[in-house]
Image (spheres, rainbow, N blue to C red):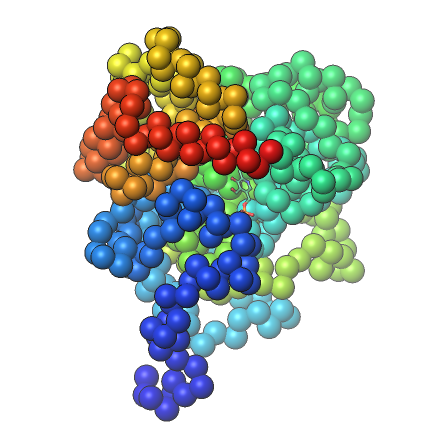
Length: 465
Ligand SMILES: Cc1ncc(COP(=O)(O)O)c(C=O)c1O
């Protein structure tokens, strides 16, 4: 590109000039609580570069990413194959989004996705996970002619108003009501599901095969039994695979872990475009789509201006090809098994470590009340201030001292969730275990910086009440 082409706008120049203002700009013009929170816990770093499962700060230190951008970086950051596909799509100057033609890429991506869910027939492409869920909710309501969706306690399906109506946490819902007339049941409670179905107004059950908040799976056999109940009552099963899909749990879709589960609608997003382009997809049965799009008049009854755009589709096709070529689903299972087993073995050693659960590279580490007196009083002090503070006390030194990014798996939960890029292997497992062991040793020694930090968190939690 010549200097003349750059005239008017120079991205690199702009960044060179103003990138240092990033936190101030955010505080001034965006959600001001984010920089505030990041300053408080010392997460206010300046990351400059990223590749695969790592990023680097302005001093050249490497950070291991066990969060994958909330799951969007399934194939790792800046995968060369996805990058090349995006460059190719840009360079092709495609006649994209004319809206009154049929482009080849959406059809090709739909064909490829449906190859992984052979019982499903059609795909709607939107731009995010919550939009994939909105689509499923609308399609289920329209196809069944019924208003109510059943969802599970602690469920997370996105934060637009429809998806919020099936959110299982009060913290997200409060103050945004009235929401839609949907009904929660406990995860795995078949009797409650049947009770709701008997009322005859339920369109569907929406469920994450493994919940993102807390990393809880329903009991074995639940999805299959729920599906049978739902179908007996002419209602639908919606699997929200926004987080669990595309290999995360060691199967392409997490519902495939058990035989015979064939959801009527499946929501996909996050990792589908290699972390580059917003994308969402709702896969479903032919009869459902045929009902929604029942006549030419209804051709745009559900659509999105950016849905099926060429960059998202090209990135999606490239991502699926990477998953296949690098056998990342099998890697997620193998590496996940290794990491989970090694972590689970530590529950005997650390009384604050209660349980390690999950599947593939979606792992929950839950902390719990210790037995010994000294630790118990510290634990109780934290719990009295706010649940989830101990997990936060672990997340912070993992980043500060060991340069590993993780997250607490939900508000008021003593659970850390690991959802690294699916490309990690033994070196990353070893690095995580060494760091986690060091942090847990510190916590069990009872003194030092870690519990000092705990006291700071307690003060803040109390101050916020
Ligand atoms: C299971 C599940 N569904 C839906 C969503 C919403 O996706 P998005 O943030 O792309 O709207 C998420 C996001 O974390 C999710 O985990």
